[in-house]
Length: 399
Image (spheres, rainbow, N blue to C red):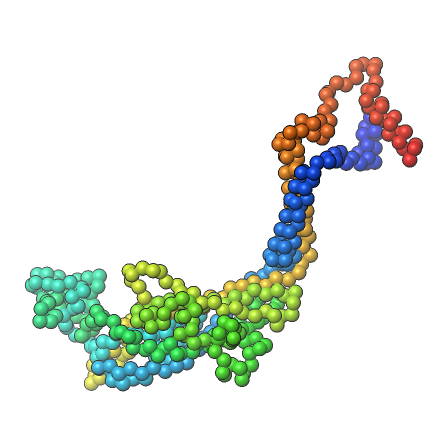
């Protein structure tokens, strides 16, 4: 028993086995095998290494965006008189965030004050006081009902309300847009990013952008792709929309800034790419973008306000990207995966040899060696094992 255990231990530590190889001289299988290997090689080198940069480790970014707009527009409306609109009037919010609205059109209801008046017919019409329940506010009500049915105009009666009077009438949207000069407004975007994993910080004011260039440039995707100053009409045009029609009822435009940087090169090659997208649906239901705001003031001791229903273009600035840099760990992982994929060629060719070709039975006999479990009887020697051992010893002497 001890002798057998010693032999087993010696076999385990001092012998090496290797799979038996069968060389098949078949032109079709050989060509298919090399073609599959070539496809795998092209995939690993071309796609995984060069295109997907499988030899790099990557990092996401953190970003900050601020904007500034410049431009003037002029209007002259009843109740408001002539007025010049600057950036403090038509940009919401005023501090210039990554999401902001530029007012392009509006409906003004000037000189409102708290009092009693007839509500808009949109809230419902009435035929008598019994139709108006005191204290009730409908979904589209503009105030609290008093319980009276009064004349809204010569033909329509509505419930009397207590609220801001006169009520807003927004049936007719001005066409063309009142602030159509907004197409000439300019937008200055300042974007700062950081790749914390690589300790790399960048701004969209890259090396090519200096003070003199910044004063005169306007972004164009081919002639000035790095200029951070944009004309609003160009942004809307590049998003696939028409500025004049968009300005009437408003809409949403997305501005994306992509930072895809290969940090194996100098950091100055890390530059932003701007793209513009129309974020809207081809649906006539509730089209556009609008909201309301008011300017409050006191006149003769009475609190008053000018109410504006604003139609504008909302701009959403989205920053995305990643940086990559050489790392030995993903490189070795990619190489190992590629070597493993080469095994697909062997599997497919074995399938072809052993199950599809006409001589598949012949190839099976050459590839597999069958041995039945018929050990020697008592007192007999294992001739196969003895013969194999003698052959091995003879080969060792010869060598």
